[in-house]
Length: 456
Image (cartoon, rainbow, N blue to C red; front, side, top):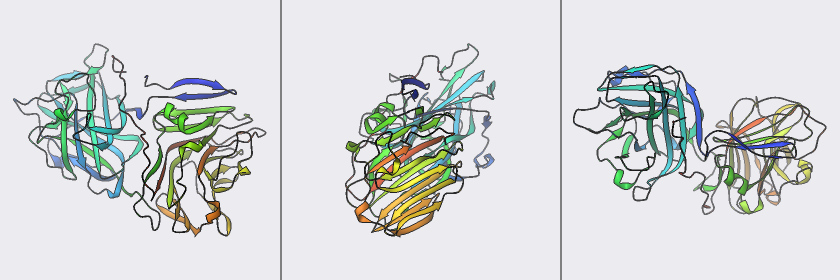
């Protein structure tokens, strides 16, 4: 499986594309800082969710090239946190100058210390550190702060983190380093925020990976790490109780995506991968991409309370409208009008701006959404006979529901054949459906990354 974005098909003059699941690549000009003392480190502007400062590597200890900790977050709010900045640490075991360095790390949302392997549900970041050449002195610990291009949302207050460093001393080839390694404090670590529950190292096992066997456990040790972001409330709807995941789409696995959704680019482009779904069409395109949930997906449970949460952003503005989220009873056929099925919610941008239309017992309410080109976190609630709409943690609508119009499906984009654009390109990061029904099994991430031999 290649990590780069790949074009996999062209249909109806449109384009499909996808990349490896749960992986984000970016560049950073951040610099390494030698850590003299814990109070010498300045925290980023956001809240510290986990903060553990390691000591220098100790003589006589061994330090693995791959290391991980399962941690308990602090300041994480009600069962969830958003993480926007990561502080990595590195132990320099030798004095060296590296021409290139890449950081590779994963955050994991599930852990079972008795399973094989122990972590589940990863999202991976590979960061090209462009401020090198970089100098390191043996026996020292260094830190580097990396703002993430995509916020990570935890599914609880516990989180796994694994990492390694790739270095190029001048040969032109990046490889996993045994001299610049994750700062796994073998003496034990007492975080300033949060706590360490378990730690792991690769201990020379093969194949090398960022996941571990129970035998890889390293007692007492803890990974030096800083995680910064904001506390969040997972189930924000008024009256929500005992909600569980019913359906999750993280846009990381293209093959799984097409099992769940009927998707066609029409006369535009549809791109899946790295945690995003991007929909776009050229200015004169007669039809925008259209994505609709398949009936077998059981996106919205047929009974009980539920919420639909999505994180999205319009990346341009045009007069021809399209939707970042439509919640309906059934879905339109491609080519039909969007209004051909009963609609509970339509989050839409066109020449009039960004608006959300919500059906309730009294009709349809139109709610101004502000600037659609800003990243926004939206939640539609159907709880205790009421519908609510939340935007970025603030309630913007509360009305009585209409039970006869209970939705069961989701669609995105626009199915209609129009007279041309310009359209409103958009990017969606995730869709979650949670409710009070028994949890539906829905595996999003798998641990099946491949890594090119030269590290690129």
